[in-house]
Image 1 (cartoon, rainbow, N blue to C red):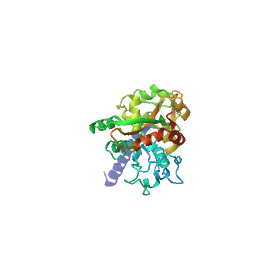
Image 2: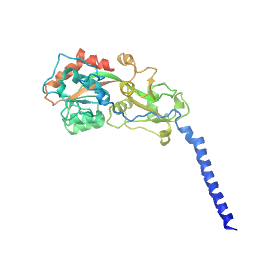
Image 3: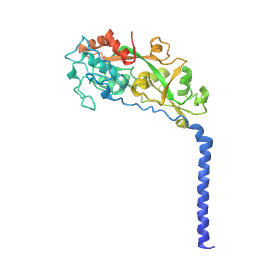
Image 4: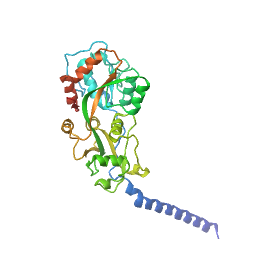
Length: 322
């Protein structure tokens, strides 16, 4: 057999093998993978950092609620920190009762000398327990934060100051707009794995979670009464369900690809939070160390619970506690 014929046969063999691989991969995709993938796209459930410079105190262009209170704190100023989603509240508090020169923002972040810090739920709690800040505005602490406080022999005082809806999210094109509480629990326990089981299309569900010490994951663990969740490997190809807080999703982030899901037929509106018809309305708190002897901590707490402070919470977009 000539070398030319041998070369031609080898090329034909390679082409045949490549064709077989292509056919196999296409078959797997059409028969299997495409059934797992979402035709709705995905939802970005990574925490978005809001633009801090849009919520600065003492700034004419700031989006915070601006009131000039008769209550003023001029010295021994308690340092504030808190959850990302609650920055507009504690920024508004500083604007109302702190001196302007106590807030120092270098164009990118608050400095160590500022009366406001901006971290997130986890690091706000750690800063409070370690004595670096005086008051934080957050959801209830996670189990790991509670353990850390016990390890440091620190007792925390938690004062409810407002209410918010804990919401579940899916992609805007997903036709499922309502779930029952039990369906949500069954999704995260691995008992429901397809949107078809809750009235949607034949697509797998990808249940997303957050880091353990985040505020939303703490609420989720409390809601589920567990920190252990079940997800089959192929569900990562599915259309996602996630969770967060209503105001953070709708006002701070404003992701047009995401919508909130009604629970038991009840939408997470301010009205439904206030009248306690939405099933998962949670408190958020002003939290401080019980051993902190700064006399102005109570003054800040009293202001937050006053008519002016509750006005800030309501006008920001949350639900006042009283």
